[in-house]
Length: 376
Image (cartoon, rainbow, N blue to C red; front, side, top):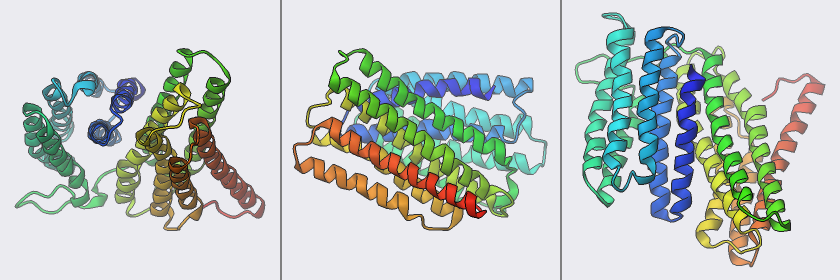
């Protein structure tokens, strides 16, 4: 049932990437970021909810069907969320968040239970943020973005402060139950959905063009980059993130930091990489303009730096490999901006950086296996 629910978000991811691809400006990047953060927040809260519910029961199935429908409405509004479908986007988002937590508070949870208290507090915070979501949907132009940024600020701050309400005792971070394996698997599946977007854009871009030397080389480079992203996440980061929650007294707050907040950076990086791949395949021998170059470089750089931050939070150790590799990606971008470097060469250098990090990881894992050391 949860996999079926995720299908809507495959479409949502595609809509966000197309929004960015069609508006390669700072304003367009800001709009895509706002939309992505909203899409992520609606999926993320459902994942936390189903972590405590049984998706194989009919009431929960019906809830997920309703959330899917709301998510589909939100997705079809994405391309024109800052035009004539802003109110549809805001209403759909708010309906998802309020409807889910109304179900948790008044249907799933018993009277006087801690679960009802938690869901009720979250519901109140969503209603407060909803004022700004609806307000943004009713106005046009720049004010819409500011209204929605205020709404996102409330939504994203609430878990950090544990949803305080006047006159109510403070919630304990450990009061949320967490099924570690299921939780890590769900977030891994969203990463798979995001990686699927790189495959879709790579394939669709190449299918429209003549398969000459440049197109084929860019196609191969893009696929190799996607494979490297998969390797870097599922062979290293996912395992480390899941292991960091096992037996951890503060694992709820750690799960919040690593998954709720940290993984949106991973997803954003993959989407940027997907858009960058399409740009390179379309014009492999051309020099990228500033906006295109920024997009192509930002994907791998953000992915590596996000992994560095997640590893630091998960293990409390500074892994210099990804930090250095991310900075090398930035250096590639700066160098390419000052020299007449074709898009294919820029992409190739970035992919080599990703593959290099994957090889270093594998070398460390092999060494740890030989010595019997516990992998970091």
